[in-house]
Amino acid sequence: MPKSKRNKIVSLTKVKKKTKEWKEGIIALVHECVDKYERAYVFKYMNMRNARLKELRDELQDSSRFVMGSMKVLRVALGKSEAEEYQQNLHLLGEHLTGNAGVFFTNLPKEKVTKIFADFEDIDYARPGSKATQDFTVAEGEVQGPAGPFPHTLEPVLRSHGLPTKLDKGIIKAVSDYQVCKQGKKLSADQAALLRHFDVKMARFKMFLAAEWVKEDGEVTV
Picture 1 (tube, rainbow, N blue to C red):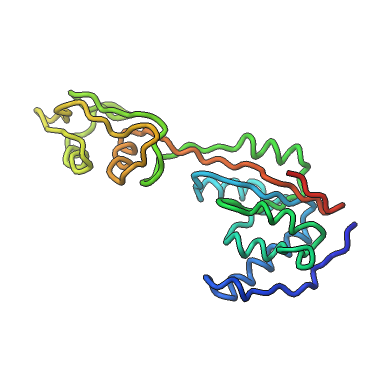
Picture 2 (tube, one colour):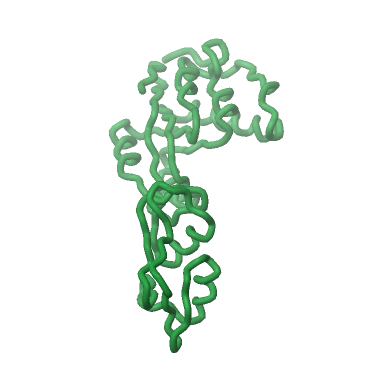
């Protein structure tokens, strides 16, 4: 068992954006998790959906803990160098905390963790600013929603988002073909709203394992 470095003093002088109490709380939580769990993983994510992550947290709460926050604070908590690390080689794990990332602490075997992350996926509506994953066009004529024709009361809403529509005897019609979005282009707020009305989901929430730390020997594996 590697020697614990839990008594190291961690400096917060270079981390200024949030309150000192908040930072110290994150650092204390990370240290508590290092003491409690046998493995730690840095994971990367895209298109985060908090509600779905909470569901996964609840499913794994008896064996695991997700910790997320400022990358700088998480790296400080693990240790930014060999001299500062909380336990052996945690600074090597912290080197992978870049971009959209977090730390997953667990007592589950590696094979189970790998499967959980490989199988995890959630498809949701895209948000403004994200890129369209496909072209989507509304054809001229009667406008059909996911459950059939839209109710006539929705016509001004669709029109307010840029869809060229009119009411014809209570039926919403597009006066011409209208390309809502183009693959690879960023979505505006109006485009994202229209995709939601048509039940077109383009956001894929996915998490990927980047590195593993094992308490028993301090080994870090990419």
